[in-house]
Length: 194
Image (cartoon, rainbow, N blue to C red; front, side, top):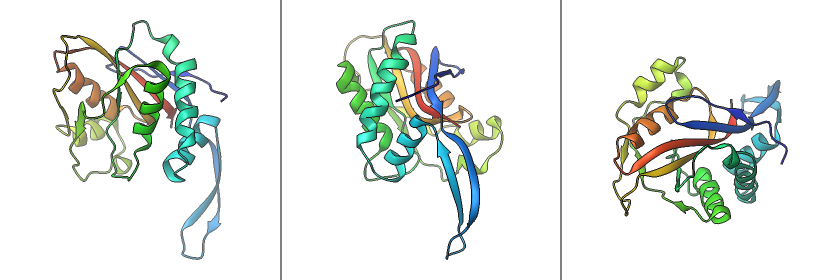
């Protein structure tokens, strides 16, 4: 997979995204139901995320995990101890980010903890909000920690997500994780950025 890794900054120790999600998107008209249609060109990582998330093609989870292992993990200044998938905003039968986290865990031998970070749905869509401040306000109080880690810690955590946009969700996740005494530093790996 060809990537163009970009640092992403926030309240975490270090973060990187594999590549931009969409290169261009051209409106080509409406379908028979009046829905707009687009001809979209994505990066390799963007297409893999799209295929995994919206087409249900699970083989892309392994490709994305391998790209994170090869292109992002060597950039971190500290050892990662556990992988935490970003909690999903929408309920799906199979969660794409969880699949990527599982594949990354299998490749690296790191433990994946799915229920460490818990998100409470609040019914507010971040897509309809414009500023980082509006998004942070909407996310206030929506994440909590399931204090289930065994061992003394502190453990450095890698949070995995599919798309980095404003960083609001990542900031709230990082702040929540840092509130748990067993967590050391928080690192971020996003598959794509908007």
